[in-house]
Image: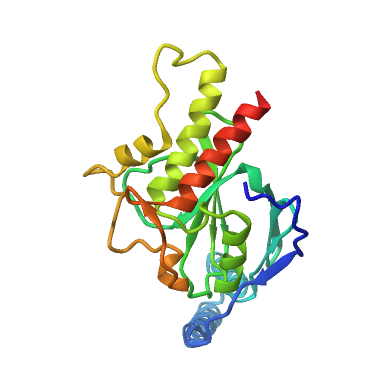
Length: 258
């Protein structure tokens, strides 16, 4: 985790964004819904019946349309944690995740085989926000599963997040997964497992995940922070030096707790 004890950092807040061209799609949805209501009303008058099923579907569709338009998200980087709030029509979801529990953030991509088992996946973003989806993995105190949050935020937010957790935010997926595996491995070793097997280094873990057939390690559609801020990233054997430093820092913190 980034050392924020010596530097007083102000809370940084970011909000969801409504991509204006999506208004056309939203308007079309409401027009089609209104047409459906008119047709159902006409059918009911002609047949002297109340179409209960259609009325239920209309209510459900209206709720979905309103929820899609009115859902808002708030992200706030606090002193020692990330706070998230998503509000919609009739529902609210709050999350508060300490920085020390965050494994990392990588670009979201659809995969047949998930590299990690997710116990929870929270969609903390607006459907009408056209920015890239990022996947945040965090510790839920399990040696087999992790939590995942899908997010969309501004470039200013990500830059501030990177400043607070250097080497762990908007990095390649295999690096986030390695952070995750190393944390799980430590928990299992603390329980007495794998004592006869040597511990794999962080660098070796990344190398294993970058092998052909893992769907990781250089996919052309994968984004990282460098694709947005344009800064040159210092690499060591294909991995950012900041990421390697973050891994060493986590290892030292783990040793101190023991």
